[in-house]
Amino acid sequence: MSSARARGRFGWRPRSLQSRQLLAASLGLIAFLALAGYALDRAFIRTAENGLRERLRSLVLFYAAETEFGRGGDLIPPYDPPDPRLRRPGSGLYAEIVLPNARWHSASAEGPGLPGGPMLEPRREAFDGPLPLTEIDGAQGEAYRFGVGLTWGDTPQAQFPYTIYVMEDTTNLRMQVRVFRQALWGYLGGAGAILLLLQALILRWSLWPLRRVVDELKRVQRGQANRMSELHPRELEPLTESINALIESEREQIDRQRNTLADLAHSLKTPLAVLRTRLDSDTSEAELREEVGVQVQRMNDLVGYQLGRAASGAHKLFAAPVDVAPHAEQIVQGLEKIYALKSGAAKGVLCEFDVDEQARFHGEPGDLQELLGNLLENAFKWAKSRVLLTVHVGETAPNRRPGLRLVVEDDGPGIPPERMAHVLQRGVRGDERVQGHGIGLAIVQDIVRSYRGELHTGASPEMGGARFEVLLPPGL
Image (cartoon, rainbow, N blue to C red; front, side, top):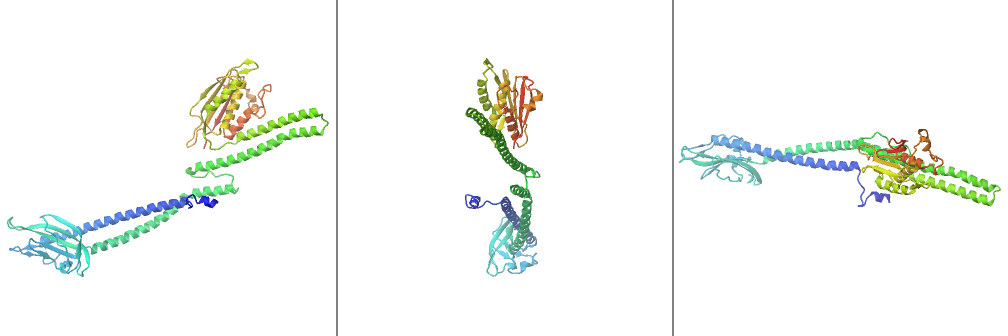
């Protein structure tokens, strides 16, 4: 079943990161080498054609300088041609002079079927090719041709035009191109193989930190390590920090559940022992019934308290941001109704808000309700007439969600400095004469600690009463 899920929806297994990057880089390298080879091949052919053109032009200019005409206009070609191939029939290099009523060919043109060139205008140059021709053995070939249009005569009335052509077949050009291509693709192929090997080594080296993360995860899964190490590249630090945070959060939840069960079992030992003692003694039925009711209520309170503590302590690590103002308004509305009258006298406690619109609580709404509810209820309980709730954006860090600063102040009698730490202890009330369980501020402290925050207590400089400040650090 897991193998089928790993193969994905389309029946194939996803490739590894290394194979994907190597495949993409290889395809890109092959495409680049192919385009580079094609561009170099075309550039070489164009350069070879330009070299052939200049060579044919120099031969044409030689014939133009060495060719003479008799008094009757008879053509007198050069006795010694500029290239010995012009004397050998079918050599591949041919010369032709086009006259108004005749054509002259070099000795090399005897036998092959050459394409006839037209008469060119004076001083006009033309380079054509490749043109089809028939070799001396009857095979079909191609040739390049260069021609220049000229005139001869002493007077304008006696002048007549003529054109000189020099042609060369593509045998030498094809041989040059073939040799160049063999060298080009050989070198490109060797360079491509070396680059692919180097690319594979670079990918393996660059992905080594990821393999190290995988190895560390396996060690954590096998219990050989407690957490991920901190020696990782900057790009992987958010990942490893998130994994460590998940590991720590999971362990904290397990420890919290274990401690909650241990605390619950320890707390229930006393009422159970009392009931066992009462059952074993000669207690009347009325007294036993009363004692059972008291101890059952006590056990019920203990169970409710432990379950509430466990629920408030287990929060999601990556929770959606929660707007603070709506929850605060809901809690304050209820508290204002409850504390509208106290001991029969009008109290009329009012709560003022100083809430930043950008401030958000990154956690579970239930934790925010417990946090605000206990702090505000404590402030309403001791305030004379005013309570101030301040919520601002806390510390910030690059690539992290911002922290939160939450302050609750009242104008009550305050808490003496020597009793600050004592009041935050579980089950301790600021005044034993005031009704309550003494666990509200302890729950606040547990919630703040579970979010790795800080709880500061002191006197309010503005209102004179108690001041409780909660600082939650930037999240992942």
